[in-house]
Amino acid sequence: MNNVLTDFMQKYFNTPVLEPGLFYNSQYGLRFEISQPSLDFYHPNNQEQIYQRATTLFQSVFEATDNILLVTQVYCDRDHRVLQRKPLNIYRKYIRNRSLLRQLQHKILPPLITDDRDESYAPNEITHQFVLPCTTSDIRYVPLLSAIWHEDFKHLLAY
Figure 1 (tube, rainbow, N blue to C red):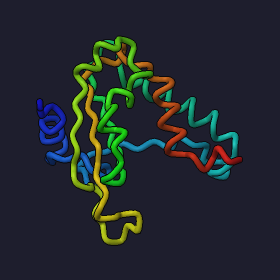
Figure 2: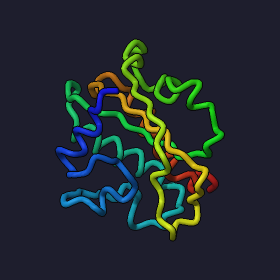
Figure 3: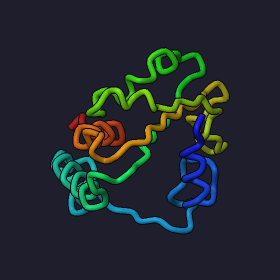
Figure 4: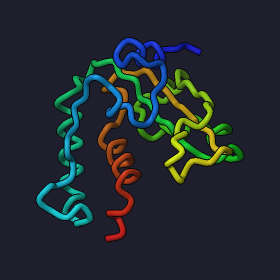
């Protein structure tokens, strides 16, 4: 497998592994608050604010022709086989040209969350890592950002 992610991580972050806490453990980082700071974090009006800020940041950072690495890491039980059988489904609806999915790289890694203080860590977990080299124009970034937002802020959907 091409080590495009490993090479990128080594070059720009001085580590070969993309793992939780990367932002806090890196020499450089830029962080943006995407929810509305003046509202309670759980307030439903944060949905529109998160959407607007995430989309605006993406559009401000990337040009349509920029090369990017679309990386997803899924932490799950070792016995969970869906991602192993159908790895292409993880990006299928977010990629404009489906033939690009042939370049999808899929690795199964040991658990990356190994902090003893993390109660969610279990020794029978694995990490599915998906890497897709592409350009910004290859992806449908608005639905992708929306899916990420819904995953990261599930608790807001209950309101």
